[in-house]
Length: 134
Length: 134
Length: 134
Length: 134
Image (cartoon, rainbow over all chains, first blue to last red; front, side):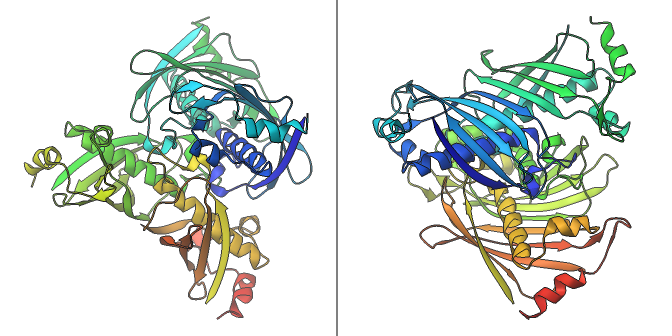
């Protein structure tokens, strides 16, 4: 299992008139978490696209337990439960500043060879860097 | 069962550098669909909030089958499979201009009495207007 | 002078916790207005990109006179005061449902030949369609 | 004069199909910069709203000199040229990782007493903290 944590400060732009973070914006928070996880492994999503592989999302699932509020510094814990194949599933847990679990989610992404526009296996160097954790 | 259809034109702002609609923006499309569904029933979400009931989202689930692209005029079909109680689940199907199914999703929302900040039953007039379809 | 009007319904996603439309979202409203203006001239921005010309924004200016609110059906009036050259300036006026002027703005965009990545003149067919109004 | 600098990493959600940051998203970057500036002065915008003062934007101006791209870690320099009165103007300069100036802008905001819904002077403690810089 590989676990990584990062923090995101809620922006005013991300709130709605209920005074909470708009429910669609958690997808962006998840994106930031998985991108920073990849960076922590000395790779990056940007580099992956530059190397001809993109990772569109196949599936998104969010559960909203408590509202996130403006200016809160949220902790996002992102987790891989198994090594990627042609797909990868990230699990997310978000905590507010009181350490309350406020949101959980999963996203499944697929590795796509951009030139062929077809699914492909996760890049070897990415799997190598993850292997020590599994 | 109650089914309603509406159309949404993809904005440039909603695309990302893959050239597709960013995955988090479907949540906004779902919002537009359920709001227009409510309007078609001679009620509105705005009016519901004005009457002291808000409907935060408890759960979101999206499946991305095909990419939505810039300027496409998407058809969104939104469906209620049963009458709301203290919760309501909307089912969504999105079609592109070639009538291809590109995305499916569900959202579960809860009715909250704003003053008490507690769950409550769906408003009677909303249930009454839906009843003829069930 | 060429003037075009279109309507935009304010989405919940576009509000912020002040209960107004977030100030950055007017840029998206302006985008919708100029895109629909181009469509009204039997051309489209999508087609322009497909034909190798993109139109990045050089300058944006917004004045916020009154707040736009959730679910309001805004009228956007967009205006060209002169024929485009290598640049084009759109002027915007937004009105709420009470016909109050709530926002004014301008955007200047440049025509870029995508292949050469260099500024170019506005496409002839676009100018031809506009000429009758000037 | 008071100058403050902060960094923002470009999110995938913020790009558009040109492969650049969508022009409307700079308004959010400006928001982050002014909010972090206020935090650096041991105050915060959140606290200001909690104390009954909100700061809606009256005017926004952006000039786009070069494109910001995905995953770039932008430096935002925000500047106050004079002490706030009932209004405050923030000036922004954005630099990419090559230290190129890519964007400049200004926003003018007004202090509003929320309860009275009327303009008011900037809070004394905010002015006091700024005074040493002027």
